[in-house]
Image (cartoon, rainbow, N blue to C red; front, side, top):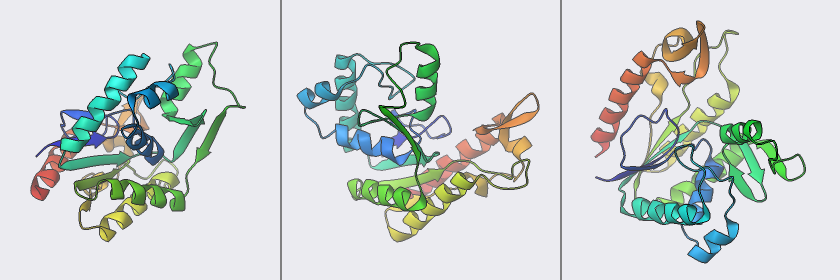
Length: 230
């Protein structure tokens, strides 16, 4: 079976085609909007700041070709894997940008077009996340969908990260509602210890990336999970 995945480096399942640098539902809905556009429409909304895959900045022709190939890959896929890891949204001139890439772009470009006037930074709540997911699932009603939240664990303050709790809860809620949707929670397979599941920077968990051991575990368990669905 063919698969397509939307997510980050934490989405440890091998698909020939994928949209990486994806962290929230708005970015996914935007791509699904783009693949229904004509080439002329895509060229008209192109921005040189676009980053949609592999940290690359695309020319207008490359951007159009990327969207065309994305549509082909999604259309022929039987399984869609979706990792939602953030509720943060960056809206610039009616286009959503990935938060980390936005910050990276700001630091590298002294003449950046992003500013407080034309750029809106916001955070989704449970209701908007749920509504977005409903819309995404409708787009994939004839495909198997696997939903995956961000990894979470007790922080140094002995509490969970609130936004990640919301994400996990809503993804599981959606999976219960739809027969073609499945929920894979990485924390079902890992110890609740930030120093073992997260990469350590100067012996401090970065709370973003798997440790090498956790990565091996989740890669194996996710593959088993998806293969059992097939």
